[in-house]
Image 1 (cartoon, rainbow, N blue to C red):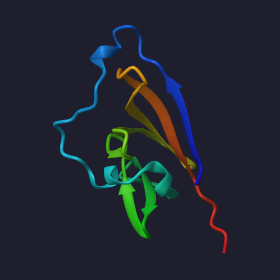
Image 2 (image 1 turned 180 degrees about the vertical axis):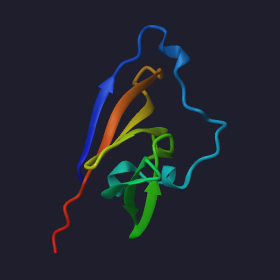
Image 3 (image 1 turned 30 degrees about the horizontal axis):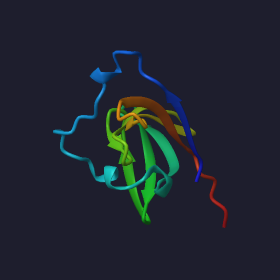
Length: 109
C-alpha cells in the first residue's frame, strides 16, 4: 500500500488544535489508512470522487469527508492521490497536524 506522511508541527498556539470528538464518526474512520487502497477517481457533477477499497468493499469518498483512525479529513482528490489532514498527539500530549495521502494502486493480475 502506498502511503505518505509528512508531519507539520503547529505553532506555539497549537493547543487550539484538537480533533472534533463530538462529531459522529464516518464508516471509514474505523480502519487504518494502511488497510485502504485508492483504486480510482472520477469527476461526478463537477466534483472529485475517489474510489477506495477496504476489506474487499468499495467506497466513494469526497473532499471534506473523514477517513482513517487519526481524525483524517480529505482535503484534495486528484487522479492519482487522496490527500488528507490528520490530527495526532505528539509525545508531549499536544495535538499536531500532519499531512497523509493514499496513492493510486496499480492492479497486478
